[in-house]
Image 1 (cartoon, rainbow, N blue to C red):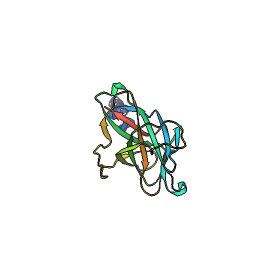
Image 2: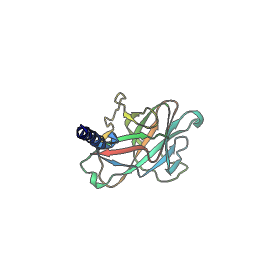
Image 3: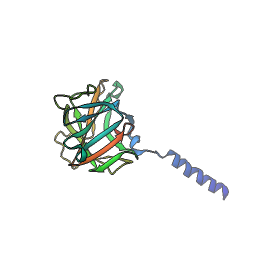
Image 4: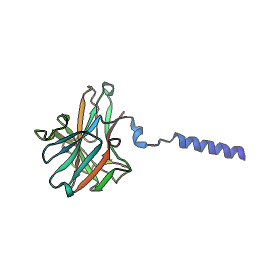
Length: 190
């Protein structure tokens, strides 16, 4: 009886140890951003290489809209792989009151701290809308939003060794999503 009980416990513990701690990360290898920069729509200013990403508008911001330019380097080892956009808000991050945001690709990378960046913020095509429940949660891809470009959150990984920037943009009249650079937008690939 003791042997059977010990065997059962060993099997159960082995199953728990083999279970992935993070199902999101199982999809493949993770590509983290090189850095984050905050873009101010009111004047085109860039806060370069910041420690906190922000997607916010309304309230105390007045007419300003803050978005985060998230810059990644895509190494040649990604040739032929499929990339997927993901987003995680950690337990100390902020998600209120609108729990959605858009992601756009850009025509350029942020050039550094600037009082203005013209023309505009280099925003190109919307590639995804995400919904998020709150802090300490993963964002989910919103398939109900019309995406005229048909891109979605999955794409063929660039593999030219160059940097590319994706912009996280607020949705709604009042939004405040803030995350540490250890969290936020990231890419998995398989």
